[in-house]
Amino acid sequence: MALPVGIQLRWWGIGLAVFALIMWALGNVIFPFVAGAAIAYFLDPVADRLERMGCTRVVATLIITFVAIIAFIAGSLILIPTFISQLSELIANAPAYSQKVQAILQERLPSLMEPDSAVRATLNDLGEALRARSGQLANSVITSAFSVIEILIFIVVVPVVAFYLLLDWDRMIAVIDGWIPRDHAETVRQLAREVDQTLAGFVRGQLTVSAILGAYYAIALMLAGLQFGLVVGLIAGVISFIPYVGAIFGGALALGLALFQFWGTPWWIGVVAIIFVIGQMVEGNFLTPKLVGGSVGLHPVWLMFALSVFGSLFGFVGMLVAVPLAATLGVFSRFGVGRYLDGRLYQGLDATDQD
Image (cartoon, rainbow, N blue to C red):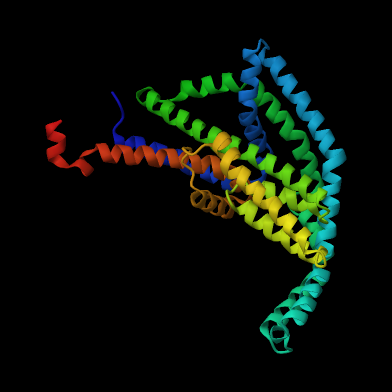
């Protein structure tokens, strides 16, 4: 005999409250474990495909780990030092850019740069702030999230957690499936499949799109000769995880830098703009439809809302789990709406009695 609905809701509510309390209490302590679990989830389809090709789970996990180590070493030796160097230089040169903006506005629009104008006062304050804090800002951008010890723990713990979870992923899912209340097993499994489909369609697909766009923007901007092209391209690619935001923010940043660097040769500014136009065309017409699809059920506004809410409540860990939780809540919301539309509250007593 099934438990009454009120008691079931009470227990599920207690479980969600305990989960939220643990997230809030542990904070960044569980970040390496959450990151490792996310990596294992993303790589599980690769391991399953290798298994279908004849590899055992252990061999498949070892192959994935070896490729990941090689990619990490290559990135550490080639990409990361260049990125940090360009990012630090970009932040250090920010005061000079502020002064150049004032000079351009003084030349082109002198009325905006009168001594008592709000524009001039704002730019002066911004330049002084950047000049005073540029060195501190460069260091904080690189090291504010973690101390040196935390970075070392992250580098060691995340790969180990990801390795063991990837190795035991199917077994772990089977164990969790055995914990599902028998009265609701099929419903929970169906919801889990929908959540997995949403995450697979959006998160995995959007990460692939972001990686492709980041590589394209970085290489294209560097070939165009834009200073800090690597930083701008990678930032635009990462932010592309939120649809349209990456192209808008990255394009504005790239065009702003191009205006300073190519002021005497306007056609190079046009080249930078064309790079982002091509990127948007390829993303909108090929990458997103093929890799993400249009039926994943995660609207960009809902995604940004989830990132803001979970980030403010649980910090960086909250931002990491925001998308999976948003996808889960979206699936549950659609399930609840479907039950409501099929129920007596919506259809009324007459419709229910006729059935």
